[in-house]
Amino acid sequence: MPPPSGSGHPSYPAQEFRELWLRQDPRELRRARWLAETAADEHGFEEDESFRFVFAVNEAVANAIEHGSPSPEGHILVRAASEGDELSFEVHDWGSFGPSLPQADALPERGRGLALIASMVDEVDVRPTGDATIVRLAMRAGARA
Image 1 (cartoon, rainbow, N blue to C red):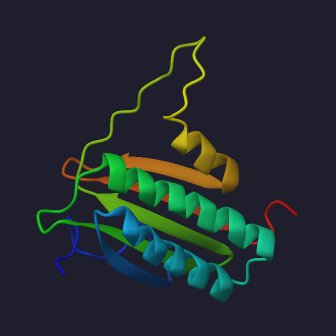
Image 2 (image 1 turned 135 degrees about the horizontal axis):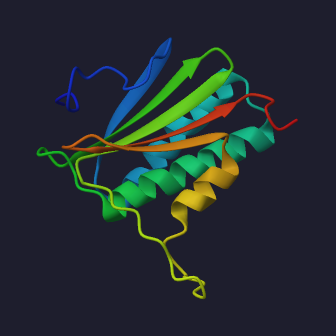
């Protein structure tokens, strides 16, 4: 598989990382969850921390599959990275991100993914890079204890 735009190394510094190239297909969510679960277990997350992390990852990857654009080869890239007490997960797609604000009186059934992700983890960052969009979520072990 080709590397993402740039050098193919994690977009954020990290001591260790694992990555998967996923087809833009909802059936690939199980592979993303497997990577998130494995990383959370290896990082030493408690059961509730692991659940929140995997839930947030699933939402971020589902958004990329549904709303993002695949690489020219038809893939999105996901990376789990560990540094110190922080575990992060990046979702790279090759689309452009334009956040929209819901109407003040509206309670939409959709479009709340980033807010949901943010409620589950310690940090969420959306970074448009010109030729791609990177969504990074991060969680620290024991941060909400």
